[in-house]
Length: 74
Image 1 (cartoon, rainbow, N blue to C red):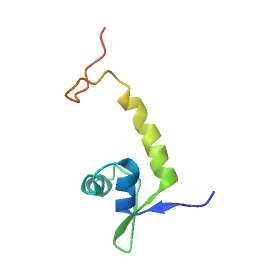
Image 2: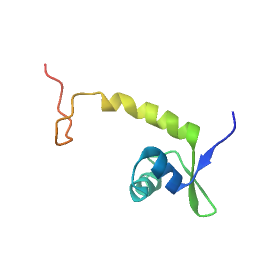
Image 3: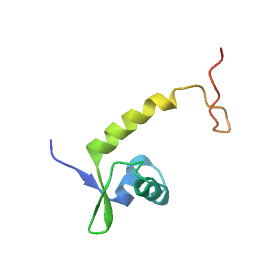
Image 4: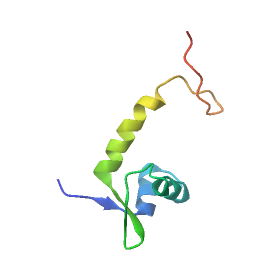
């Protein structure tokens, strides 16, 4: 498989997120990224693995209309 790399704007488009938000996540080490020649680069395969790792936390209880996660009913 060929290594596919994305810059910040490409990643923002791929994830449908704001590039400023992703820049902050990368700076804080919350996204798999490398800085090359002063610019963030993201490997698509690593991003896909990162997304898969986030999925369990997304299923820990329903989300109400405000976007707030509610604990599961006992």
